[in-house]
Image 1 (cartoon, one colour):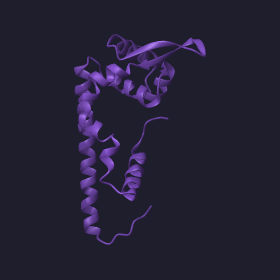
Image 2 (cartoon, rainbow, N blue to C red):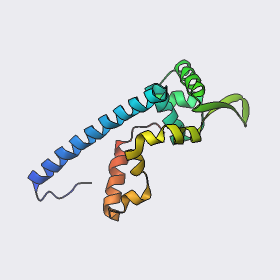
Image 3 (cartoon, rainbow, N blue to C red):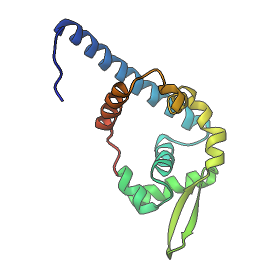
Length: 152
């Protein structure tokens, strides 16, 4: 969607600031993830898989391997560590008892991990967006959806 450029100088400045802000956000999020993972005895891959379980719901190990690009052997190690730390558990798939589904422990995540992401948590509450009109919300939604690189 092209936009009219009435003030090219201002546009360049704003785009440069947006790029800088986005980079700062990504780096801040990476650091927060590293600190949070370390604080609860996980590594970044473990935390990433745990986040994917929340995003996609309880999943078989093979699905986690697809979503992360990790091997099934590596995912087995991740699941073992998540279980030992109490953040997830393996349960039998009710539709096929030969399969195992990995389920996150939502209460433990809420208690031990979510408080470490207070700023991000504020941005995920509906009240945070009352300052934006509908057109701005649509633009933000479009921008974020174009940034997404999570496998579906």
